[in-house]
Image (cartoon, rainbow, N blue to C red; front, side):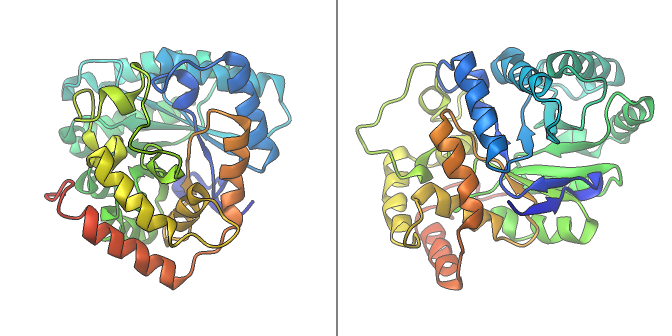
Length: 326
């Protein structure tokens, strides 16, 4: 598994990581034993970067990772968590006092004295330009509660603002074959600043797995059901913000680009990893088979014809439909 330096953290992380939103629910019920098996399979396949958040399953995702690391003390795993969504989304709630409370909870969940990387979890836009927020994060680093901090963003302008602050080690952003906006400015700026890029939602909430049809249904507690119109959080988090059936048409086009011997999901992950400036791609997995397949995507080669095909699909199906002002 290829490793790349995660921005200003200086840590080497696998080019394919593991997103663990699925292990905390919000994608349907997850068995704890199954969660442990997914973490183990990922580590065995060379994945050494786990991404989580304090709100994934109200801490269950963090707790699963904490239990796994406690049972496997010899593994060198970098864990990135997120904070901020436990409070009402007002800029004043992003304070040192709240940060300490949230970080302490995550440290207990993850069974560690110091968190490897803490990311602000898509806060209100004003937070990214507030110097007092970065001062508070610097304080947590100085106190040893966290080792590094970064941001998770919805918008490209938020990413660019966060990179202006020298303590920002990484930026997590939605990037996939159906969401190309970060390629224009964010990735070049991150490379120039030495900031790591963590690409989330790489399969467009599963669209790019190639497994869905117009008859596919999702559980009531699965965000692909309850957030299709963006009622609960940013619409771009679910199917890249387009109508499900339109997304299926785009997938049919994408499948024509997939190299022989690779799966649709593997090609989608490999395409992101091939983009200059990306540090790690973090697909989620609910099964051991998915975890192994995702990790194997690191070995899939992407050529220029594939790149051109992705851009044609985006222009044809997505560019005018999703977040045109961003």
